[in-house]
Each structure stands twice: as structure tokens, then as C-alpha cells.
Length: 430
Ligand code: CMC
Image 1 (cartoon, helix red, strand yellow):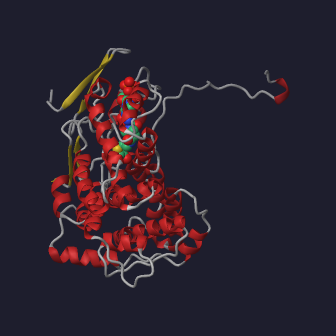
Image 2 (spheres, protein in one colour):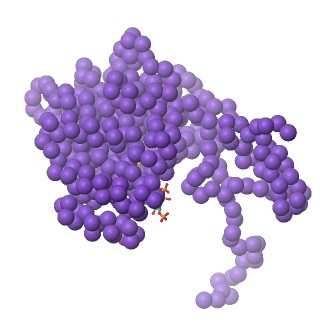
Image 3 (cartoon, helix red, strand yellow):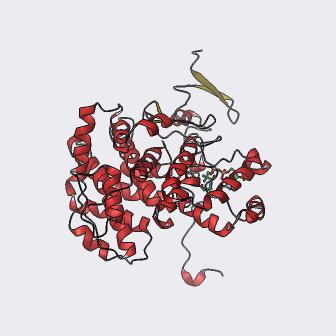
């Protein structure tokens, strides 16, 4: 018997079959040969929430959740956060290799050349209520880009794809900044292609009447590192949405609008906003024990804790804690940090969290930094989306160039009624 195989005995029939094991996985389709009769559909796997199902082969991001390891294209996240710009990491994630100096220069110029959004976007933006949630506005504006770039639907044309990738990398910060200014009722500030990626974003957010906006270099760098930390995270909920929608060959704008929608949920990217709300509710360190008790009795969750994949300290949370110190030297300490640190300490010692391997995740500290920088909580997830943009695009491209991929279409285990005849309305019981 070849070593890389799995033999399964179906105890319903006593029949055994042997299926290949490749890269530690078996193909779910190989299980279909397990049948109880010739007209049986065959065995399927039941895996709500994809707890143990690989939907693709990928070469982009590696996570070892037990060891707390995160690598993009093989490079450890801490080395990238220490040494790279976000656009350099975006290039790496999308192309597979770090750029040379001239490649990085060309790439940066190309992205900077795509930061202006179509004129009609401003009119669409004006149609939204000022208090609309920024993630809803962002998803809508990204979907609206599809109406300006109809050629984007040629998703199998690599040259067309490349233009849309540059547009999305260039325009997402502009859309995000416009969304933010709109929510504050402020006039929009157009992009400035002469600035770096984070400086341009900060200028579009915070520029007033001054002719030239000078971003604080510590804050600009902190934001760039936060974008790097969020750049990709393999098959998370929003990336799975990106791949699933993309598999129907929808254009990248419609596809990314779906990914943004998935990111907005409080169990995913929306958690960074929820953490701040939670720290507000807790109010002071004296109230932490009572709050932890509520979490343990199942009344609420400790937002910013726990992760499907990490069963150890999230390596991004460790880096974020370091950035927080640098940001607070400029902005002053966010008093919420003391509550967060005390909460983390108690949670990491408490049996409930230890037993379930619940550690702070990326969202636990990011909101505290964003708030210290002057952002309102409802914009936090938009900042996450700007970083994740590169990963969504890389995963979308990988999907489209993978011959093994087809339209995503899971099976179900049907437990509903067997066939029955229609009952006229007058004959239906209560
Ligand atoms: N607070 C309290 N209990 C928790 C938490 C939490 N934050 N997270 C998980 N648990 C418990 C859960 O109740 C379950 O307990 P039991 O075994 O007694 O039923 C156990 O831990 C295992 O949790 P799970 O729900 O099976 O884990 P999951 O992999 O399905 O969910 C998660 C992962 C991130 C959705 C979840 O941990 C959670 O809701 N965390 C809070 C929201 C959050 O911070 N999300 C951001 C995730 S990181 C960035 C991102 O993806 O955007």
C-alpha cells in the first residue's frame, strides 16, 4: 500500500477504499465513492463554518496558529513590519517576491497615479446620510466603481486585472478618506500623488486650509505598519467571501464590496470598533472582574479575544502593543490602554480563557491606537480594509489563475420535508 494514502472502511457496507493523501489533505471528492447502493449520491463531508476544510491551495500567507507564526510569502511578519512600507508588502503579497529598488519605485509611482476617484463618486457620496456607517458607505462606493470601469469584468485578462489592482490599491484610501470627511461634514481633500501612501491618506483625512499638510512621521509610519499587519491573513471570512464571489467571475469591485461587507461584522474586522465600545462600558479597571464574570457566564464576549486559527498570542497583537507606545509618545497615552492591559492580564490568568486558548487578537489594541490618533471608532474597520486590500487582491488573482478552481458551490445535508403534494389554501390546518 503506498504510504501517502488513507484507507477508509465504510461500516454501513463493510467496503474499504483507499484515497491519496497530498500535502496532508484528502480530496473530499474521493469520498463520493463510498455509497450504500449504486444510486446513492455518495459520501459528503459536513463542515459548518469550514472548521477543517481547505478550499484552495495557496502560496501567499502561512499561519501556524499553535505557535503564533504569521508569514507573507515566507517572510515573518515582524521582519516585514520592521523593514518595509505597506506598498512594498503589497507588492510582495501580490507578486510573490520583494521588489527591487527600481521595481518598488515604479510600483509606488503606478499606485500613486491611481489615487484619484471618478468624479461621479463624489455625487454618490453626497447621497449618503452623514451618520451612515462608514463600512456601509465604503462597500457601496467600491461597488459603484464597477459602474465606471466596465472593462474590469474581463477578469481572465491579466493586463486588465493589473489595472484594476492598481486602481483599488490607489483608490481605496481615497474612498475611505472621503467617507470619513463626509461623516464629519467636511469638504473633501483630493489625493496628492507627491506624498507617500500613508502621508497622502492622512492629508486627505486631516488637511484643513493649510496649503501643505505635514503628517507627523511617527503617526504616518504607525499607520503604514498597521496596514502591513492587516495585509493578508489567509482564508479568513472576508477573504473567503472575496474568493467565493470572485469564483463566479464577478468583477473585482463587486467582489471586493462583498469582502468589505464580510469584514464589517463584529466577529471579524468590526471587532476593533467593538473593543472600544467594550472598554467604554467597562469604564475603569475596578469594573473588570465583574465584566469578566459576565463573559464567563456567556452574557457577552470579550471582544478582541480569541481566534479561529491562533491558539497562542496573535503575533500582530505583540507588534501593535509596541506601536502603541510610539504613538502615545506623540499623542499622549490613551487611558483605555490601562483598562486593556489590566483586562488582558486577568484574562490570560483566568482558567476560562486559558482552557479555551483565548488570547488577544489583532483587534484588541489596534482601536486604542486609532483612537489616540484621532479616529472615531466607526472608522476603525475601514482602516483594516485599507490594509487587507492587498491580500484580497492577491487571493483573488491566485483564485483566477488556479486551474483547479471553479465556481464556489458547497453541498448541503438536506434535512427538510420529503416530496409532498400542494394543499389548497382553504384546506390548510392552523
Ligand atoms: N470571549 C469569550 N469567549 C469566547 C471568545 C471571546 N472573545 N471567543 C471564543 N470564546 C469561547 C466560545 O464561547 C467557545 O466556548 P465553549 O467551548 O464553552 O462553547 C470557545 O471559546 C471556542 O470559541 P469558538 O466560538 O468555537 O471559536 P471560533 O473559532 O468559532 O470563533 C472568533 C473565533 C474570533 C469569532 C471568536 O473568538 C470571537 O467571537 N471573538 C470575539 C470577536 C473578535 O475579537 N473577532 C476578531 C477576530 S481577529 C481579526 C479578524 O478576523 O478580523
